[in-house]
Every structure is written in structure tokens, then in C-alpha cells.
Image (cartoon, rainbow, N blue to C red; front, side, top):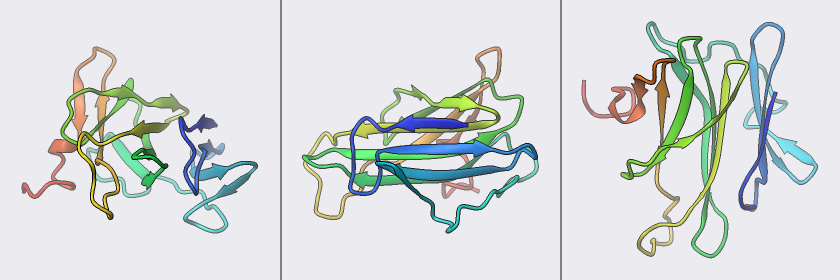
Length: 153
């Protein structure tokens, strides 16, 4: 199980929990105080959700929401194969990467971001991008180059 408290509190979240059962199935829930919530109600375990041939990383969920005074809470989780030794996340067009919390084949990230310029009324924060590295430190996955998320074929 991974439980991460968010750096700031939003209207809907102050943490995220990912649990893995004995069949290597995963479930993700957002927390707010002493209550949990999930996009699936009740939370359902998923196994190899959206896995494609040759993929080493996959996502359960990614949320962005305002957290007051120009701040945005970024939450996300996913799972990875055994060839992944490190998962990081970058935001928007910034190259800096931040480590995700990893355990049992699942990862979670939580961050608070402020935009460089004042956003419009419907701005939901910069997009998070997942990166994965093998044990030698070689990048083996970069979401910014994944055809599933780009217009490139």
C-alpha cells in the first residue's frame, strides 16, 4: 500500500492511497480527512488496466484541481513493470523531474504548483508527464513522446 498526503488541501483531496492485493490488482482512492473516494464506487481492483504490448508503465488516474490562492494540486498514480527502477513526473513544459513514491509495482505523485503567469478562469494547471528509468538510470519511458498522448503517429 502507498499512502501520500498532499502538500496542500483542495476541496476534494488531501491525500491519495493505492493498495495492491495478493493477485497484484490495484485500487486507487483519494482521501479527504478521514474519508476516501474513488472514481469507481465502490473502489474496484484493476489488473493490467490499459496495458499494451511492450508497455512498461500505465496510469490509473491523474487529477488537477485548484487549491486556493493560485495554487493547483496535482495527484496521480499508476503501475509499472519490473524493468522500471525509478518513476518521475515533470509538469508542463518544464524539464525538472520530481520523484514519485513507488511500492509493489504501483506509483503515486502529489505536488502543488503555481503557474508562472496568472491563469484564466478555467485553467486547471499544467499537465503532468511521467518518466520511467531502468536500474542503470537509462530513461525507458517519456510520456511527452508517447504516441498515445501526442499527435505523432
